[in-house]
Image (cartoon, rainbow, N blue to C red; front, side, top):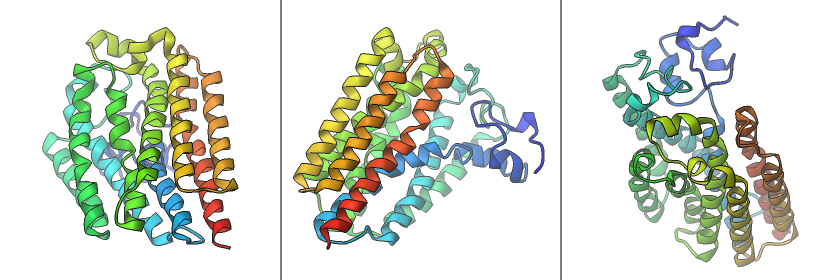
Length: 313
């Protein structure tokens, strides 16, 4: 394993990640644009998709979610998260150059030219579009409809103190998509699941935003971390309570059995732990709690899969 060159790394990526140590130097900036050195983002984008597929599978009487669908959503999540991050970096390249945590990213540091970043974003989006084309027409149309929310998100922190809400609307779209590809339509259950995923996203991204609270204040950017400040813990509790209530509504509407409720209980316990452990002035703890939502998502998904299996017997 080679020692990473500090001039070719990103300050807010985990030290010694595989992108910095294994990829050829020419490829690294593009992998960093796609956030391949930080997989937590695509996990958080993926979980609502997989929750929705698993919940729909139980309703459809299937013992397990279709592995092909899970794989397609995995590929799509990695590609579209990468495209979204690249787009965000293009829009925010001048802002990122003014923030200590982000000025080493490929665009503000000059390691990738703007035209190269645009071409790379288009290539990532094409991968996501090819995945989308594997689904039915309703789902394809539904997926395309999400692009409007994705397009406006990077600008929201310039005009509102609630950009996390717009992120939630975009990042949670998979809660609709998973159900749609199983049933070629939507119902009340995936809509409730979507609301729960949005509230979950607003909560965990508020935790994440506290790392940049002071820099955002200096350059006049909005976030729920700045909006709620010392009241962030109660706000986080409200977001997570709404997330659990909405997901519970989805389970009830889908006539989930005991394992779905057990998965929801485990999910709720994990979110409560985050609220208890939250410290707005401890950046390292905020990052750790944010990343722990990968496990929170896994707990709920496991419950939905187990429920589908039991229901099919």
